[in-house]
Image (cartoon, rainbow, N blue to C red):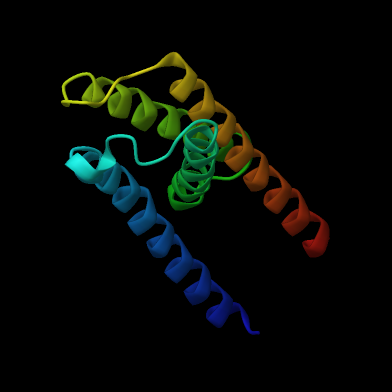
Length: 130
């Protein structure tokens, strides 16, 4: 693959990551406000869902940032955690929903996993390019 095609692919993936980084929080905000969201997942599966969603979110935010290294990891983790805080705050105001530190902890585990995946990707890329 020539350099120009690689650059276009990376730009397209960055746009896709940005769409995911914007779409997931919008889906959490809108979907979380629907009556069907009350009791949708039972423990412990709800924590697994939190971790999975926030791992994807951290990856998307970090990759969409266009940064590399520590700044990318920090952007992904902090961005995902900010979404988690807003989501838990939002749940305080929804009938039948409740906010919890256990949910926020699952969000943090997921954000750390997503940031770790970014780190592995970054190191693999550096190794392949040397």
